[in-house]
Image (tube, rainbow, N blue to C red; front, side):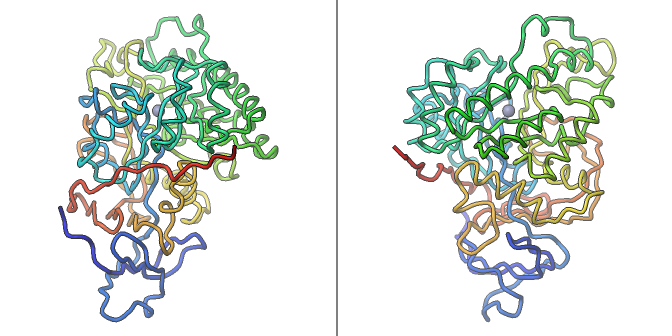
Length: 459
Ligand SMILES: [Zn+2]
């Protein structure tokens, strides 16, 4: 183990505080931010490092990551996933209850996962629990054990041991979640089997097999149940642009219905993907340019709340990239999931290059709001006194091309290979420790395992 960090300060022309960007020094004492000061106010005797033009933002909080350990560690594991996170300025990840084995649907499975993660993580890690048919009685104890949220699928998850929930399962879970103030995170597609049964030869077939209607039916059900139970529901990975209107109206009605989209829906569009291989396969599928435009608009309007990577890798053979037709792959059998844990910030920042958006706004999307979603907002997500010293130091002007072999997740596959992005992470600090420094990981796996803050019980 490294020695505990000391009292030191990092200065820059661009320190991203909740109140705006200012030229300042972040004074760090041990694991916490002691103060944000002007440079001249730093107490004498404290070493100040001047980072010049580099941006100092709160570390990214990614509430949607599939680590897959234990049980499917050959897909991805805590060591490699959190290395990728650190390299991307991500200081906290929340692991999804699948695709590990066992899936996190009981407290015993949660403890097994925590044991597997212990001592391997380069950033801080929290855990979501899972809702599946028959385990609604477990939710109370999963929440007591500190899960950050509860995930459910309204369609096949791709894993037999994590079956889909229907309206009955949601109705069993929502009163508990409303009372405890813990969000239900939902994969919102209701898949009608006959539409999903055709041959799958290319991206267009995949897109047509998962029409917007699947998302629309799921979101309509969730909005209705949210109004009925007043339970926090967070729709994950929204792909359809027009469906953002549901979230606009839910917010107008004061409902606790929130929504995430993912970097791939903000970066790619179906028009580019006719000949794409299954690296691009995910559900819901990446939709049209017009959807992408409306997702950005909803983000800028405050209708979309968070951006999660939905990092969901698998071994190369499971992506079936090697079909006889060059570039097309075997879409039918390929695993659906996109690996991109370390690219969220430069993807989003590149997408914003034609918009006048402040660093403060980006920090709300990527840090403050997701921290609040998962009940970590008393410690994480802001550069403010008393908060964990979780910092992302980055060059906002640097443009660069992704080379998959430079990424840190387990299997070197990503649809972003060769993509030109903007903004490059130089350093990442987790609780005052320098965990990533321009290609190096000097602190080692010093990440902690997190539990959601004591959830309230209004009963
Ligand atoms: Zn996911």
